[in-house]
Image 1 (cartoon, helix red, strand yellow):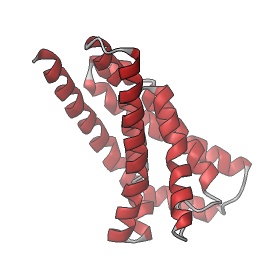
Image 2: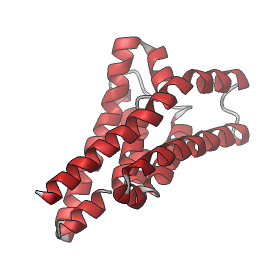
Image 3: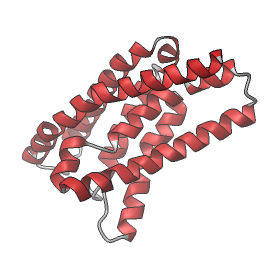
Length: 190
C-alpha cells in the first residue's frame, strides 16, 4: 500500500527506500516496545493473551508488502530477544524464538501479499489479516509437531490464550489500515 502511494506521488527510488526503511524500523521498534508495555501493565499472561508483537507485523504486511514486511516479521522477535536479553529477561524466550520468527514471517508474508489489493480497496485488509493469522498459526503448529520443544499442553494453552489477541487484531489492524489508506488518499487529492 505504501509502495502504491509513493508511486502515485512519483517518489524517487531513494525516497521509496528511505520511507520503507524508516517505517520498517518504526514497526520493529513498536514490536519490541508493545510487549514490554503490555507485560508491565498486565503481566506475562497479558502478553500471551494479547500477542502484542503480532500487531506491528500484521500492520507492516498490509502497508509495506511482503518483502519489507518479511524483514519486519523475522527481525521483530530477534531484535526483541537481543535487547531484552541485555536487560536479563529475554522475550521471547530462547526456546520459543525460532518458532515465533517463523510464525511472524508467515504473518508478514501472507498479509503482505495483499498489499496491492489493500491499496485498491482497504477492506481487503480483513481477509489479509485473518488468512495471515491462520497461516502463521498453522506454521507454528507444524513446527511444534516436527520439532517438539514444547509439550502438547503448553502449545494448547498458548493457542487458547492467544485467541483474544488474534480476534482483537483481526478487527483493529484492518480498521487502522483503512484509516491510514484514507489519510494517504486524502493527501493525494489535496
